Image (tube, rainbow, N blue to C red):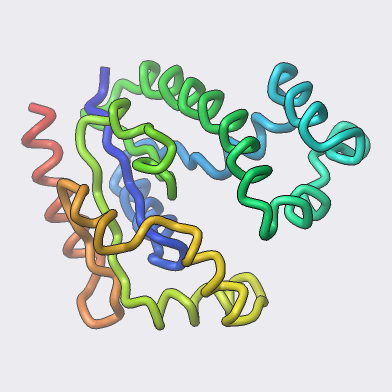
Length: 196
């Protein structure tokens, strides 16, 4: 089985961009957020539990009613925690099955909540993506066409960046001061060595 590498970072850190650079280098990447959305539509057990938690409005035409779910969990930490308790274990399991099928020296799981979702034990190493908070905020405001206040609220619900990066084995700086591609290429070489 491939060496299992987690890739994480706070909102707006650019972890998806970093993941795509690894993909260009031929590394398979599992995008946990995208897969969680698929699981919430396709996994019958998850669908049943989401409906039990949010009611019939949770799905429209057998597709997750994301605006409705977002409106309920926004500012309701209990509901958000209960939703995560349904989705995270299913996504962790799905990622494990995917990882076992990879034949490359290493594979990456890109996920915002590796530490928060207790998924650290399912990867061998974790790469953290670091970017200054103001830069992260401006990226998300542009990307999601949202307000700075909304982004700050989302950041306040996440693990403190310094704490998160302190738990990582490797760090890539995506601060628009240092080039990221050479950092990724160097780390790729190091991970190939570790994978043996």
